[in-house]
Length: 317
Image (tube, rainbow, N blue to C red; front, side):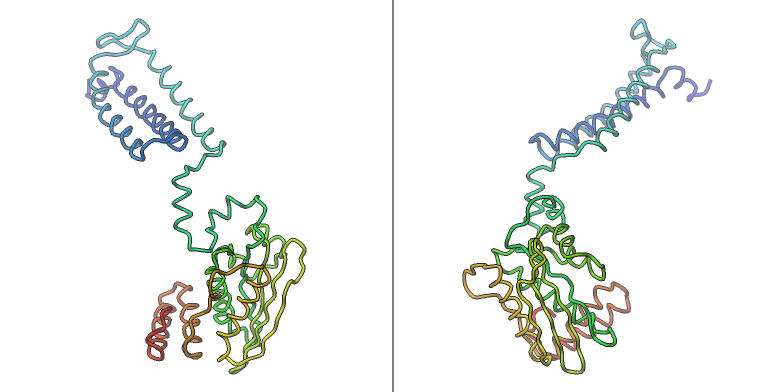
């Protein structure tokens, strides 16, 4: 008789299967309870350690004894253990089903950590999901990516850059809740109603616009919309040179703050200014950097070097 056959005869293999299934079941229960009860984070690791240490002991015990209908006996063929294994497997499957169907409570500590990791003034994507069905705050806004209306459709870096700068500018206002860039830019290029966008991001207002550049001239249109009524609270169009881009962004942010009746504690936030050509190169570099390819990253680095050559003190670069 081979060693493996002897293991099977003494039900050691069956006990090993039973122990592994039971251990997995215990770990699942411990994981669920740890999310509901105020237990230390290392509780799961401690349970796993005890189970791991218990495995060789149980295997040794099963080599000497076996479970039979009459109780524990030495080196006897038992069949009761088959029923025990089946019951444990059923319980394990039931645990998986219940775990998938029932919503799990998020610990308060974990929620606080997510909130602290979010950028000040911006709503974290997971927070947006949690608050999706709650009424949006009155002083909340999403900045959608501005549309590129240039004839050649080659100014996406400028339209996206202006939108992102406006988002960052508004996010500096403590009393204003601003949807994150990731959430807002997920609607880029999609034909979605403003009400649907606002409902998805749980905001009361939406800022949208367009950019049209020809030579050194740029036309920027921006409009603030009340998502609940689909009414334009404010709309403006600027026909300026690129030298005025910073002033336009500051003016848009100031109008938004004024329309939402946000009381500022101090001066209104303003964008950091630099040479207009350096700023244009910076927007191109950031646009290329988001593409993620090796070639685009190298081009982005080259553009940033040009920006720093023009303005060594420009922090964003």
